[in-house]
Image (cartoon, rainbow, N blue to C red; front, side, top):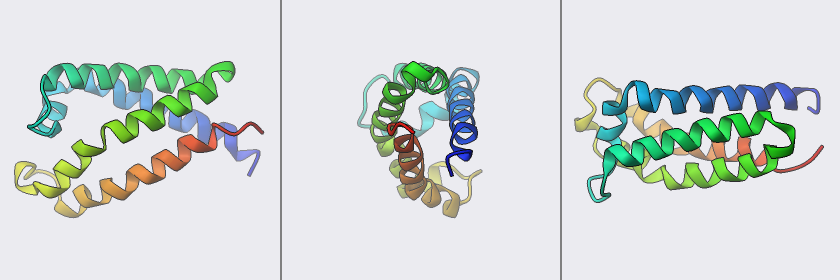
Length: 122
């Protein structure tokens, strides 16, 4: 498992970098998933995109890995309401299968566990 860890760190880092960049390439998609009770949806999309990119880059810099992993865990918890909102309102996302929206909810726990792995040295 130890030999797999660096590869998995790079995979997660690149995934977050790509997802973060996508917040700026396709902001309208992300604005639509911000729950309506939250103010400034576009700004929240930008902020979350910036933190996804920074967290992904941070994972790839050894001295920043642990802090970046904790930051990504906090970010995943912060954006959880958007994932839940999507699952609870599939009619607002007709191009996405409802089962996929529901699978995103437990997938957040997988991403949190994946990031948590990098809070542990060795």
